[in-house]
Image 1 (tube, rainbow, N blue to C red):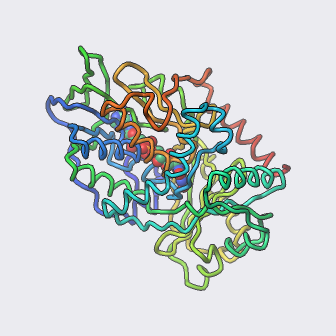
Image 2 (cartoon, helix red, strand yellow):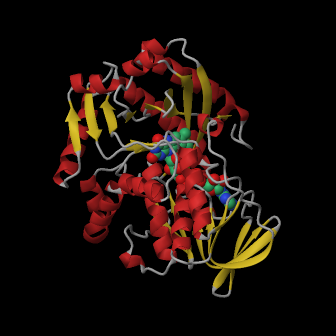
Image 3 (cartoon, rainbow, N blue to C red):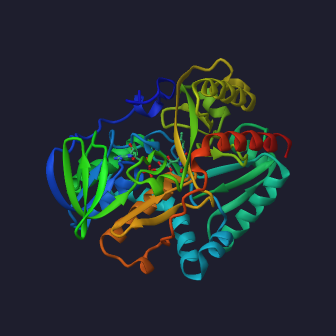
Amino acid sequence: MIQNELPSIANSVWAATSATPPDCPPLAGDQEVDVVVIGGGFTGLTAALHLAEAGISTMLLEAETPGWGASGRNGGQINPGLKEDPDAVEEHFGPVFGPRAVGLSGNAADFVASLIARHDIDCGFSQRGWVQPVHDKTAMTTITRRVEQWQRRGAPLRLLSRQEASGLLGTEAYLGGMIDERGGQLHPLNYAIGLARAALKAGAMIHGHSRVLSIERQGAGHLLKCRNGSVKAGRVLICTNGYTDEIAPRVKRSVVPIRSIQIATDPLSDNMRRSILPYGHSASDSRRLLLYFRFDADGRFLMGGRGAYTETGLERQFASLKAVTENLYPQLEGAPWAYRWGGFVAMTADHYPHLSSPEEGVMAAVGYNGRGVAMATALGKVLADWASGMAEKDLDFPVTRLRPIPFHFLRKPAVAATIAWSRLKDKWG
Ligand SMILES: Cc1cc2nc3c(=O)[nH]c(=O)nc-3n(C[C@H](O)[C@H](O)[C@H](O)COP(=O)(O)OP(=O)(O)OC[C@H]3O[C@@H](n4cnc5c(N)ncnc54)[C@H](O)[C@@H]3O)c2cc1C
């Protein structure tokens, strides 16, 4: 179970099957380091790891335990690229940072693979490719463009005919799709735990149950206070994404946390496994309210989709996710659905992640729009480069102005309305 979480979304398959987490005692007393990292998900852990490896004294403060947020709860799909396609990314970020952002995001899955290999992280990792099945003709046009743009840049993507897609997916529900051979999958909580162990080994300090309550400017640096201790640091990295609280109000208002939920079975029989995603791919489809699904390394089937903010809404969404799954794979009717859980994905108004500096000496990386397994890892390293002294102009991702979303306080009704609208568009095209 995920500790300190709503019971209705706490029964996570990852929490139930995780490795032993490292000992990360709460911060006590007054300390001083070069860099403080706030938040122990993929972004913060990767940043802390690279900083410690560079010999910089680094402390990571996590409100709960490493991997407690989205990083320990997600679908574990390592999907390269950003939400937007490479031509749009280059146009958006311009001639210098555009190609760098495309390169960083396109190589992000390989970067995850290299970290796992280098630090010998046991997290059920495989890299058999990500399939994006297509649900309607408009999406087929979008995906055809996507494949063409990445192929032009030498990336291993290709279109799938209806027959090929149904062969890889084990369902005839889709019109076709694409496969991106760079994609992979992992046990997300074990990946987070592995990153935490690697960061500790490299010399970083990690304190769990250490919510940062305030950040104050003090001379050339910052003073951060937790309940039982404080730390002074020259630079501060904000890696709190969809869980950002009032310590960074402008960062908080730059993202909209949207709940995503998942259900998972107990391990299924070999026969059943051969009939669904028989070649071990992961899939996330082309719907606006996308469905994402795969098997874990032990043969549990996982399905994810859009959640809700309220308890009754969640009950409805879990029931509907199960019904959609059984519609896609009728052989799963009556399957042992043993787990159901959820967490917050951080969306941004322009669909891009943002690296931004709310004040001098502080840098935040947030807003992966559901693509954080690869991208949060990649931007964690960029944050470490910045905190080690690299000039902004030399980073692999642009630092952009923080843009708090207007009327952020209205986000829940706005999200509910957008979801209802997206559901209609998914249904009627
Ligand atoms: C259900 C679900 C499924 C998803 N599936 C996928 C997928 O298959 N593929 C994919 O690429 N992405 C997926 N995502 C998105 C992905 O998980 C995230 O983008 C990524 O994990 C973000 O990592 P992070 O380190 O930035 O943030 P998080 O992992 O959310 O970590 C933020 C941390 O900050 C801590 N924190 C907050 N405030 C404070 C404070 N004041 N002091 C100290 N600590 C604080 C929180 O406790 C939390 O642990 C999914 C997300 C969810 C929720």
